[in-house]
Image (tube, one colour):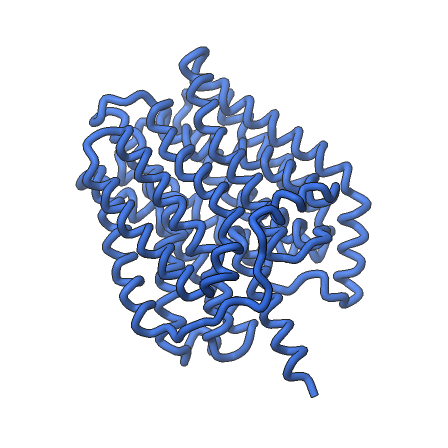
Length: 423
C-alpha cells in the first residue's frame, strides 16, 4: 500500500469511506432496473426517472453548493449532505411505488451534490503528506466506489430490489457518525459566493463550449447506463458483474489512462478519439441490441471511453475556464447533469414511440455532435496544453480524477496555503 494511504488521521479515512459509498451510487441501481420494472409493474421509461430525478436535482443543487459551503463551512456542508443521503436512500428502500422511489431519489441527489462537492476539500485540509497524498486517497476511493457499486447493487439486488437502497443508508449512516465525531471544525472560505455566479459564468465562450460538449456526451452516457440493462435479460447478480467490469475500466482509464493520453497527444486529440470511439460503441449497441454477447462486450468496453472522457473533459473545463475553479465546477456540473438527467427520460419516450434501438443511435449522434462542438475550441485547448507543459499553474495532477467539483476548490485552498506559508 502506498505511504500516502497509510498513517492518515481517522477523520480522513471516515470521509474517504463516505466517498467510496457515494461513488458506488453511480452504478448501484443499474442491476435492479429490470427487477424494479417487473415487480413494481412499471415501464422502463417510468423506471428511467430514477436517473432523471437524481441527476436533475444534483444539477440544480450544484449551483448552490458553493453558496452554502462559503457560509456554513465545508464540515457542516458535508454532514448535511450525508444526513440527507441517509434519510432519502432509506425512504427509497421503504417505498412501495415507482413514483415514491423517484421522489426519494431526488432528495438523494440533493445530498450527493452537497457531499461530493466538498469531500475532497475536506480530505485535503485534514490529510497528512500534502495535496498529493490526499489526491491518491481520493482517487482510490473514487475507483473503488465506481467499480464496486454495480457489484454490491447486484449482490443486494439479488436478495431484494430494496437491498441496495438500505445498504447505502446503513453505510452512509456509519460514515455520518464517523465524520461528526472525528472531523474537526472547518471554517467557511473568506469570500462568500453568490447564487448567480455559476450561471453568469456561461457568458464565457470557452466555458460554455466545454459545458455543451459535456452535456452531449452525458446524453449518450446516461442513455446507455439507463437502458442497456433491459435487453441483456440477466439477473441482478449477473448484471452486477457486467457493470463491475464496466466500472473497473472506468476507474483504471480515469485515473491512469487519461493522464497518459493527455500527456502524449494533448487534450483535444485525446477527447476526439475517446468521444468518437464511445459514439461507435453506442451505435453498435443500437444496431446489435438483440445480440446479448455483443451488447455486453460493447457496454464493458465503453467503460474505458467513459473514464477517459470524464477525466479529460473535467480537466479541460479547468484549463480553459476564465473564472474561479469552484464556480467553473458548479457551472459544469449543472449543465452536464441536466443533460444526463434528461437523456433517460427522452430515451424512454423513444422506446415507447419506436423501439429499444433508437435511443442508443440517438445517443451516438449526440456524442458525435459533442465532438463538433469541442472542435470549435481546438485552438483554446491547444494553448492551454502549451501553458500546462511549460509549467504554468493551469492545472494540478490528480485534479483530472474529480468529476463533481471537489478538486478545484481543494486545489485553490492548497495553493493559497502554500502562498501564505512560503518564506
